[in-house]
Image (cartoon, rainbow, N blue to C red; front, side):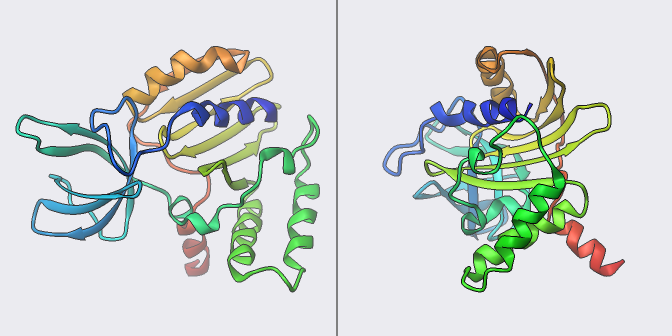
Length: 240
């Protein structure tokens, strides 16, 4: 089943990177944006890829926050954003993603929480690792304390955050965040994949690409999708 999650993460590999010189604002998929500055009550300076632009939003946005959103261009060249959804804190910072492939962690069809924990503890005991890597591995270990595998990986310049929990009935409860598809969440069994997405554009893209997964796939739309583990869980634990 791990191989199916790898294939699902790879469905975004054909999605081109956003160009810094030209952007299709009526793109077929959601985009990832960062709020650089609030100009007035409705106008914001945003960063999209390597390009900065000014646009309007009826929703209050927070400076420094990253969102998924739909872009459109109205008559007169006015750019608007819609369907904004805040990205998880663990998905925001590029430096906290490991430049590794899934094969680095999964070299067999079986998975062991104990083996994964031993791997993390061994890496954390290395005095030569950077502070950034230490923090990333620490988050992964904290997620494991909640029976959640947290894998923030960056491959070919694209971020994918995969989280999953092994259930008692031999299924996997998973969450996946991708830059150009937004958040996904679902249940994976040996014979069937059920998952939800927040964006209609992503829904149609996944329906078209799902035959590549090689199993029965059922996709639905859902208003809100939350990760299995995020930094807010750590804050709640500290307060508790």
